[in-house]
Amino acid sequence: MPSRRRTLLKVIILGDSGVGKTSLMNQYVNRKFSNQYKATIGADFLTKEVQFEDRLFTLQIWDTAGQERFQSLGVAFYRGADCCVLVYDVNSMKSFDNLNNWREEFLIQASPSDPENFPFVVLGNKIDVDGGNSRVLSVGFPGFREKSSSLVCIKGKYSIL
Image (tube, rainbow, N blue to C red; front, side):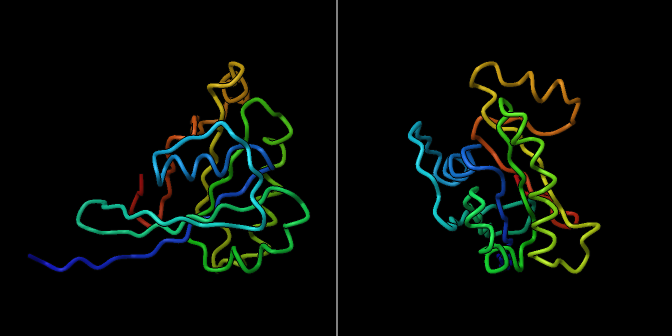
């Protein structure tokens, strides 16, 4: 049996407070969902092992606080990231409009070697609340619509589901 080498991928989840970043991470890693809201203070992370084709990946998924008062912590948490998931609440136009600010702040703080080609995933969350999928459809954005169920990250030629 050939030995399998593991590759560590650091994934950062960003977005406004209350868009469901923690719920997405917990659902993806632990298959658990809670309706209780508890704001993240600073940052937290979970890991998940994923096999894709013949490779093993360890995803280190960082959940960050959406409040402005914690944005100064970005440099420490963003540095070395392989992918960034930008999350918005499909029922909140403001959270969608703020995605570009999150992206720009990430690029400044993380200083990736190739910012033009750094992989970002935009994920609309809470489609199951208040008929929210209308926001995603009205924008005409070919993004992901989720109810705290999955994450997608692309690293080079490998897709992680």
